[in-house]
Length: 318
Image 1 (tube, one colour):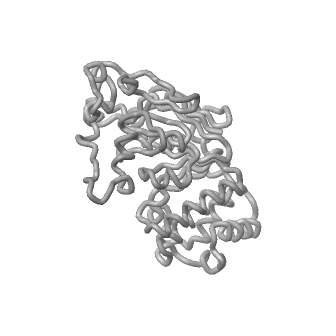
Image 2 (cartoon, one colour):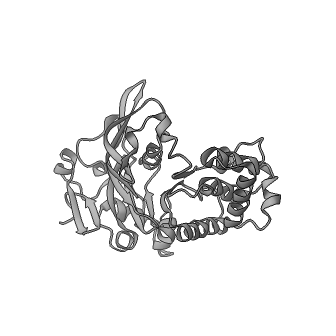
Image 3 (cartoon, rainbow, N blue to C red):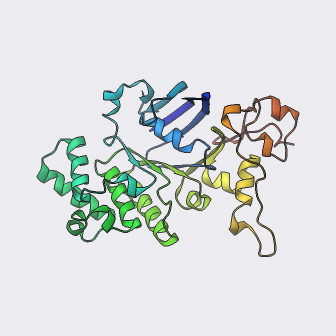
C-alpha cells in the first residue's frame, strides 16, 4: 500500500539548511497498522506530513520516494496531490480542537469534506455522515452533528476527527498521536475504535506515537526513529520482545511497568543532538553505552535479526 524509500528532507532556515530526515525507509500493507515511535523531534511527524505534501514551503526533498500504490507522491504537483488528500489517504491531526473549525457545527464540517471529495448530493452526503458518525460509536448522530466542537469532550472531538478522516473510506489513514492529552480510559476507546475500523474496512494505518503502550496495543509493525533516522524496524512482537538497537532497549527499559518498586527508573542520559550539527557517524552515538570511535566516525550499516527485523548498529553483535 505505502512504501517510503530512502526519504531525506531538509528545511531552509535563517541559520542555513537543516537536514531533518536521513534516508528513512518503511512500508505498510493493506489492513496493517505501522507505528512510528521515538522521542519528540525524531522526525515522526515530518515523515507523515511529507506523504501528503503538507510540509512548509521551506522544506526540500533531498532524495527518496513515497510510493502509494506504485505512484510516487513526491512527484505530484499541488493539483494532483489533491486527488489523494481525503480521498485515498486520510489524516488524523494531533490536536482535535485545532483540527476542527471552532465556529462551525461538526456536521457541516463533515458534510463539506464528503461533498468536496466525493461530489455526491447534499442529501447523500448527509446519509454518509450519519453512517460514519455511528461507525465511530455515536448513538445519536443527528444530535452530535448539530454541536460545535467546544460543546464536545476531548474524546468526542477525537472521534469526530477520525470520522472526518474516514468518511470517504480512504485506503490509508495517517494518525498523528491520536491519543495525546486524553485520559487512559478514552485512549483505550480511541485505539479500539481504530483497530475496529481497520478490520472492518481493511484500511492501512500509519500511527505516529511516542507511547510504547500504544504500540504494544494496536500495531502490527513498529519503526523506531531517532534524530531523523530509522534505528530499528520490524514486527511489533519481535522488536518489543527481542530489541536489538541500544536505543530501542533504552526506551523499553525506561518504561514504568518494567521497573520494580525498589529500583530507580532508568533514564537515557544526554540530549537529542542538534540537527544543525548532525554527527558524522551513528546519530545515537553520543548517548550510547556501546559507542566506540568507529561509531562516532562512520554511519552503521543495516543488519538483520531476522528477515523482517532490521537495525543499524556497529557494536551490538559484540
